[in-house]
Each structure stands twice: as structure tokens, then as C-alpha cells.
Length: 494
Image 1 (cartoon, rainbow, N blue to C red):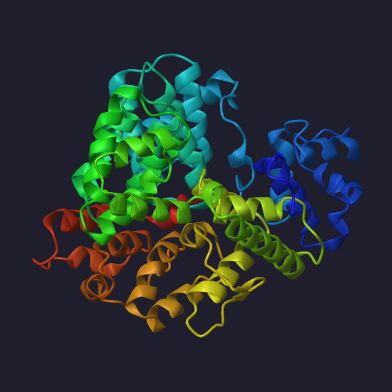
Image 2 (cartoon, rainbow, N blue to C red; image 1 turned 90 degrees about the horizontal axis):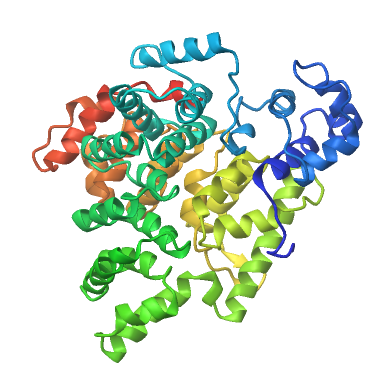
């Protein structure tokens, strides 16, 4: 397996992987691929294999026309690879084009913008002529709404646009207001993404809002907020004055005796340094401390026992060989590393899962993880005997795209209540929650009201408009109406 010190950035790795997996085998060699690329506008006629090699190794940043040509040649949607490029450069240099975009953005509530339009708008707003707070607020509310309902490249482009706006000190206030309004409007059914957009760019109130949301929920949706806080703490972005509130919240939840609260709090606690963890555990009994520390050790790759870490590394390498054999029938550099990042390493498994999903291996990985770990009929044997499930299998299955989403719907119909609960997020991201399923029954079976509404909303389920069971909390009934009355999610893939 490749060493973890190697730098496998998304764009170079995806370019190389997709060239090697091109549907036309003749295009898998650089000279033939380059000849095909040169037929596309904007691709220089002087492009040579040496330059393409430097793009694929990350030594040079590839121009957008080169990536767009590759996407089209291998049959990818626009932006599937280019959406991982660093933001900040304005594509629209012509003033008339900039004016046209601003005009279209003012009517975006009736005539939708694409994900690339949103990214261009955010770049223009943060590098060009200042815009009024009212205009920024209007755009921010629309953008958060669309980002929460989008998938694939459309999602990544919109979340990057939101991060650009949130990072700008002049307009970060209206962006924060839009996120706050969104959390209430959607009944906290989609919360992690919007909060992460603030914390990722060190928004001055991002972590405080995430902590406030976490403390107010204390229920099923809090897991996604816990991951936001965990990443924030692990990457050292948390402001020192918030530590006391975070510590007291963790102490309360870890000693609550409530399994779900303790499980969610462990996600946050697993990101703490030894010094901060000792601060949290200071008033605990020896037995309580031991139990918490054991849970954390089992959830952190850097503290895994040597034998466990070795098992996961061998499993990632074995899985990489299996996937590469299914897709390209050849070894693929970097795949084992990306599998480790997506399935074991807790630094940012969601982003790593998105990268693998954008690769030629996303479809095969989704099926393989379900077969190995979520199918009750399979024998889960691994290279070291009975295989343990990867720590972030659920995250990977939630992000990886498969070309036959109806298989997820079939698995849901036939699954046990616990299996159905685990399938809700993958179903949401594939817009494949079965339309004939009664939502009230699904909530009762899975015990996951928010996730059922999320899956139903992403799938435009017809039952959302009539969800008026008084047993369902009022906030969740309002969330169902929010999903039912929003833009059609199917148009937000671009």
C-alpha cells in the first residue's frame, strides 16, 4: 500500500484514474487521449504527454478546458472532476458576461443557476464590485437551500460557493443569517453541510453556531453536527473561549447513561488531544474514564492497536486490488490511500468519500461495502479472519454513487429495521427512497424521523405534503413542508 505521506490530491488522481478507465480502451494511453482532447475548445494544440503527466502527478494545475474535455470524453457530468479545483479565479473576465450573471442571479428564485454559475457568482462577489447586503442575503438564502438538496458535482460547486461567501469578512454576516434560517426551516434535517461551510473557512461564529445546534438537538440529527465539531477540533480551528462550553457538554453527554448521546459525544471526544481529553474526564470515576477511553481508541485510527491498524491497512489494500480488477484490470496508484482516507482515517471521511465516489471505483465500492458488511446473508471473512467493519463504512455508503440506485430501494424494502435505518442516507443521495413507502411507518420502523424526511425530501416523495400525524413533532412536519415546497432536487445535479 502507498505510504500515507504521499500526496494524492483529488484532481490529479481523478484525471489519471479516469484516463486509465476510459470507456474506449484506445484512449487509455496518453497520446490518443491528447489527440481527442485537442478537438475541444480551449485545449492548446501544443499539449503533449509530458504536460499531461505533470497534470496527473499534481506538478501543474490543469486548465479548466483540459479537465472539461476529459470529463466529456469519458462520459462524466460537467464539473465531476473540475469541482475539486481550488476556487478563487474568476472565469468570467468579460464585463458583459459578469453583468449577465448578476442579472440572472437576481432571478435565481424562478430561473435556476447551475452549480458553476453559483461558484462564478461567489468569486465575482468576493473579488469584484461590492454588492448590497440585501442582495447578498437573497443569494445566500437561495444558495443554502439549493446546496442542501443537491448531489454530486452540483453539491460540491455550491458548497464551495457558500464557503467563498462565508470566508469574506464583508459579507459573512448575511451568510451566517442564511445558515441559521436554514437550520430552522428544514427542521434540522440537513445541518452538517451548512455548518461545515462556516467552520471550514474559520467563520468567527461558525463553531459557536455548531455547538449551539449540537446542544439544542440532543437527538438523532446531532450526529452530523458532532462530525463538524470533531473535524473543527482535530484541525485546531476551535476558538479557545469556546472550550469550556464544549467540555461541559461532553461531560454531560458521556456520563448520561443514554447510549445514543454517549455515542454521538464520543465522535467529538475522539478528536481531542490527550490534554483536552484529560480535562473532559477529570471528574469521572476510573471506570467511567476507562469506558470512554476504550470507545475513543476503537474509533481513532491513530490510536488503534497495531494489530487492528494493520488489519485495516491490509483490508484497504485488498479492497483496492479487488476494485481495480473489476474496473480497469490493473493496479491503480493511490486507490488504497483514498480508501484508507474514506473508510478508516477520521480527518474528513466525507470529503474522501466524495472523491472516491467521483472516481471510476465509486459504483463498485458501494456494492462491495454493502455485500461485505450490510448484507445479512454474507460471510464476512477478511484477510485476518472475520473482517471488522471499517469505521466509516456508513459515511462511504452515503457518499458513493452507484449506477443502479434501484438496488438500494430493493434492499430497503427487504431489510430489517436496523438495515433500513442505515440505508436512509444512501437512498437520499441517490434520490431513490421508494415512493410507495408510507412515511409514518418508515419513521416508526427505523426510529429515524429526521433521516426519513431527508430521504423522502431528496427523492421528492409524494407523501411529504400529507404528513400531518400529530405524533410527529411539529418541527418535523414543518420540515416536510419545506422539502415539499422547495425546488425540484433532480435539477440540482449540475
